[in-house]
Image (tube, rainbow, N blue to C red; front, side, top):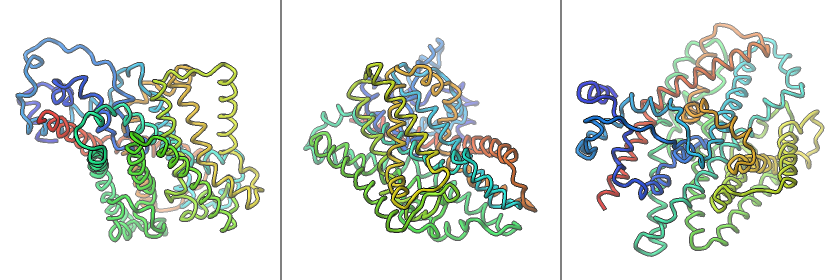
Length: 507
């Protein structure tokens, strides 16, 4: 970053988008391939397909000697250096340029709202762990509206849904390149599969491992000074089991052995991505078989979850949203439904070119059903008198039902049938926050744990205090995520773009 900044100020005015210098001669031909390769990681539905939902109309460039200069003369290594430019990367992150009309801009709002929901529930858990008036927690959890907090787990299902949707749309929009390459279907598909998996790994891992290391160091230092009993033992588990996170396998192990407990989502989403890419490649030649496998995966997820819940005499309670964490919360076979509902939704939007129009009556029924499902899933546990059978059905179908309700809203927004809601979810203010969602998700628990460890006494639990802490956590998370994105995430994305466009030019 320092070298890139020095070069900019010594030799050039702030350079234009690095992406344009590496793709100016490829233009329309490259766009489809770039959408496939620049999937932005798909983690948290946070990065996946970022260009698809944010690519806007570029402002006309002013005439000048710098703009007229052939960008290819800058050379490969110079473009690699400028990939670390904080000026360029920072302007990209905070840009609120209008997006193209056919883009899925409503996903920006869904990302931001979902992350806000996640931070809210984690803030309550932060205060609960160090509160002095523990009895008030019991009173708070009995409140009907507290289900909004205790059932925030469904926000993660929204991320899974977005990931599946964008991976599918990007894949099918770039399908022409798959069919045009020489060689057999098996060879071509295998090559694509390996490239896309490696791309995702390189795209996500640097920022992820940086935060993991930062978390281990911060927790180790904080635990030595805190007056509270440690809520987590990341200073021990991360040192021993960090490699599981690096391979995105940590969600397959017990909670007591997990480093960065909240990173279970990263592992699940990566596992879904690998399986999803395989099924998408399979669908090119064996579409019905791929559809059958997707349906089987969703149904098997329901059956597995129901069986585990019923065999463990699980009863869903407002007070215990994370009961049976290892058995019923973080395992991929429990969360597959939302991801593959997103896959199906992405295919529908691609196939209809976002032109699907429902009759007025069908649309109204869809909105009512969607609202009823969401309300039932989030607030259906009150007052907590569910049986084992009902709780097992709730655990099995709740995540998929939530994703189906979100799918209807997204389809309505993307097809222009819900302009008011679409305009709210597509506010320009959402664009920068959406780009930072991945890093904000990674860093926000670290901020909370370090803050708690610095306190010299317990807090007095009060909803007003929690609200103030929530906004503080949210702002601090976005500020720190901006720094991480500027230093690691954005440069890696730029380098990957340069590598892929250079490879195409070499052909």
